[in-house]
Amino acid sequence: MSDVFEPGSEHEQVVFAHDPATGLKAIIAIHSTALGPALGGTRFHPYASTADALRDVLNLSRGMSYKAALAGLDLGGGKAVIIGDPATAKNEALLRAYGRHVQSLGGRYYTACDVGTYSVDMDHIARECSFVTGRTVAHGGAGDSSVLTAYGVFQGMRAAAQVAWGSTSLAGRTVGVAGVGKVGSHLVRHLVEDGASVVVTDVHAPAVERVRSEHPAVRVVASEGELVASQLDVYAPCAMGDAITDAVVDVLSARIVCGAANNQLAHPGIEKALEERGVLYAPDYCVNAGGLVQVADELEGFSFDRAQQRAARIFDTTLEVFELAASDGVPPAIAADRLAERRMREVGRLRGMWLPRL
Image (cartoon, rainbow, N blue to C red; front, side):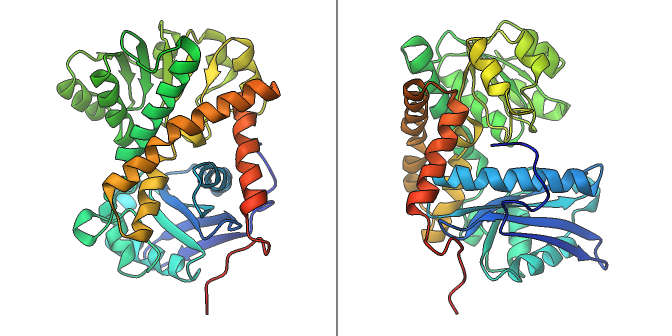
């Protein structure tokens, strides 16, 4: 997927939402509803400019279309961003105002949690909106979707280990996790339980301390740059996007890159540079789909066991991506795109766009 494109191109709908009374400034992007209504989280982040927010929401929403298609869901891709610092700007009034804007789309977009938003925030949004997933368990929702996001990344990592070393176990391998927030901390637990040696970093000191207190054997380094330069078997970017840059590729010792962050490749061509360095890249939207699977299950009446079984299939999907990459002679990122595009093309509704029933 290309990282830069004209604003709104390829997208069905882009909505700028503003509520002067609460200070809400948000953008909702619906990339595709060919497979069904768009589902994607709401990111609350202090973007430096509206242009930065727009670029992020367009890329993220497009990634959601591919993620849903590759995960086998009858859903399209959408995403939303709220511009502001969630630590100071987020409140009930603003979230409810945002909910009214989502409601105005009539079900073409379902929202959920993302960076800077939590299940309790979804409960506030749901007071004004019928199209909300990722709600708290107390309100009939799936709760924290990071649980199965991390589980899916771990399954993808096991598949990558099978291809790289002939074993699905990470025991004895050194895994570097950049970002130990909602998803990264759960991933660390899976890795420690599997016998891996884990090295972590995060700009948020309390997140690091929480992981260290739960897993005393985990080693901490001061920065992402130091982590990337360490001797690793697996590098797991679990923070913001654009984690894999040319500079990272030049110093990376890891045999595998497999993490939860969205849009990890900083620019087109990075996937080829990774392949040339002998690094096996597990496409981000393939392995991090567990959270989407979890919140999508809410639409049927949530069952954690059912959602976890579906998220476990990420292992098989990741292997399928690697097999297609090998047979077609292309990097895994391109193979994943081909599989997703094939499903959107072959299964997508002939009208190419989902509309609510009247």
